[in-house]
Structures are given as structure tokens and as C-alpha cells.
Picture 1: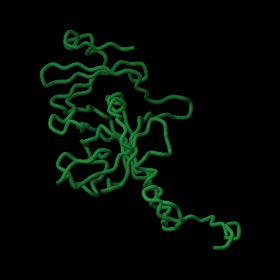
Picture 2: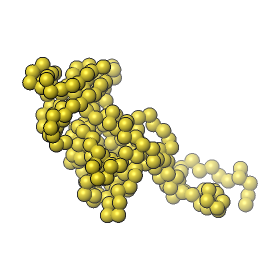
Picture 3: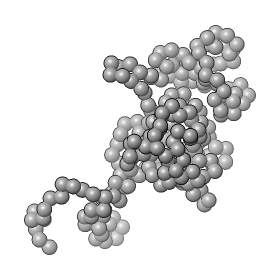
Picture 4: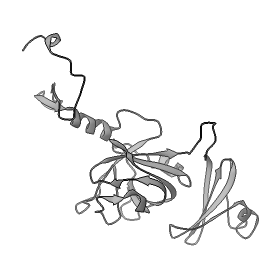
Length: 231
């Protein structure tokens, strides 16, 4: 092998380019492709982005639903338009096997961004209406979603980043959720949050958004049913 500094520098790295390295298990010398390294980084969320958790989309759930996955309740769904998705089942673990359910629950009532990590133009902005633990598959949570903007389709095996989303326009304006509380009456869940400092109430019946109401509901018929505290 020639001296390393005698090789030409490749300034146009492509997916199937290779380099030589040592496998951790057994110390075996192997080739590694840029594409597979990128897949590893996406899976491990090794290039940290504050507030983003990565999941892979799983369609085949015949054997089991995997940690770090998002999927439809019945599986399948490869190529489904992101705009048509109203529910997804989230693992309580992100793709790097870290528990992130507390973070996800903190996003309920606000908007989230879901985008394909290797193609950000495949994205959707959803209102995360509710997040409910599956009573059987307890490591998974059912998210009720309302699409507000999107492009593209969800693809089997691809990795998707999920993060809080706030719209804005240069001057610091936009929608910001600063607090969230919820309460329940039977099968109806009342959720309250502060949007740009203004209280908003939403109502879900068995996990489905029934109505979105304004602050006046705090002062009328729901006032005695709710135990909402804004901070």
C-alpha cells in the first residue's frame, strides 16, 4: 500500500464510496460505505440536534413492533401520504434506544415537525392532539395527529426526526406553546395550553379531536370540570 498522503483527496463523497476500517467485534478489517455510516448516524442520533428524536418507520409488525419505531396501528402503510396521516404509534424509545416518552408527552397540544432525515423535503407539520399508552403494547403510545402542512410520503425503513415546531416570521413572532395541562371526564379529555400567552382549550372524545375551543370555555360550562393551571 502506498503512503496515505500520496492518494488523491476525494471532494465529491458519494453514497457507495468506501473506506477501510476495523470491526469492533473481532477486530476484523472491513470496508465501510458512506451510505451505511450515514444510516448508523441517523439510527444512533449521533449528530445531536437539540429537541429532535429519530425513529424509523416500520411496516412489518407480524413478529413484533420494534423499539425506536413509528408505525400504523395495523402495520403496513408504505408510501402513505404524510398529509393523510391522523395517527401513529410511537415507541417510547428513540432509535438510539433512549427513553424519550416524557419529552414527547411535553409536546402534546402543540405542533410537531416530522421529517425524513435524509430528505427534509419529505415532511409534515402536525398538531399532536393526544398521546395515549397502548394498554397491551405498553412500550408504545398512540398519537392523534392533525396535519397542517406536508409534502411527500412516509417510506418503510426510513428514519424520521420528530421535534417541536413553532411557526415564525423574522421578527420573533409565531406560535409558541408555553404550558400544557389536561383533565378527563369519563372518556372525554379536556386539554389546555397557552398559545402565545393566550389560553386555548381542546376537547377529545376517546382520543379523537371533537372541538377546539377558546378561553371563554374556562369561564362557562367547562369551568367546574377542569383542573387546569397555567404557569
